[in-house]
Image (cartoon, rainbow, N blue to C red; front, top):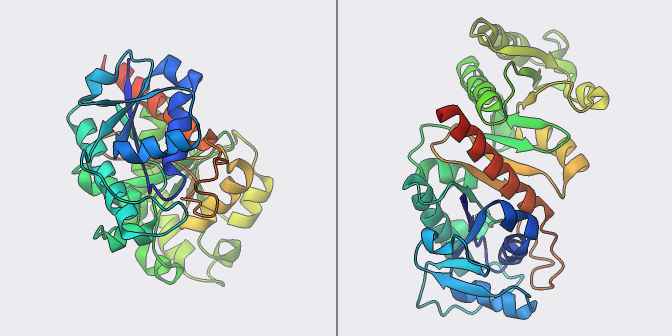
Length: 333
């Protein structure tokens, strides 16, 4: 049975709670072996706090977790003695979140786990702990020795890939180039085919400026960069269309109209998706050497420690990781 490694996230946020609740889910346990990765005592603290019905146990290796009725935890710090403070931003929360990601990536690279699901982290506490990455997408890409990656947000509503991710809006225009867009469209197209099983994907490409630039009247990027990139992608046999004005596109878009949507920047793609699928959306990192998904929400420090965090997005992230793993294995046969 496939082993899915689930990281602790920032243990002062809702990461341990949604990880434990997801690992206890009958639906999840019937289809894979969920393996929690992080300090055992941090998980134990929340399991006792919420009177979790299913017992937890420590394992030394992923293979030890297979077939167990308990929630299994790969302890990355036997001498853990940090004081947990739900709702507080602390360097220690970022430190152990980062180390859990490192260990989970190692398991996937070594083929000891089939995929990794990363619980929410705080970029601020990760930086305090010395992890200088814009986000987990870039972090996992680097740690898995992958050449590049793109972020794809997935829900029943749509698959939305981002040309740029965690950069200031002021840097988007000078970051997008024809070469960058072509490269990421190719990764997106390849992922839709291999990871999601769509033989001939249709991809909608959004413009950058209002009204997709109004033929150059509201910015030069559409005519000078985005349209040439679409033409180049089509010469590579990628069925890309656009650029579409983002507001009008999402105003008329219905599920299934396109197999993928390619947005120019973070909020352009994520706001409409989260409006429709906030509790079930999934973050998938395409183009890397391993399989990594994540829930589409953050650490939610405001409700940490209250036992009310919704695990739906994490459960969906596990399901997607498992499905992608199956799709890739089927292609190798």
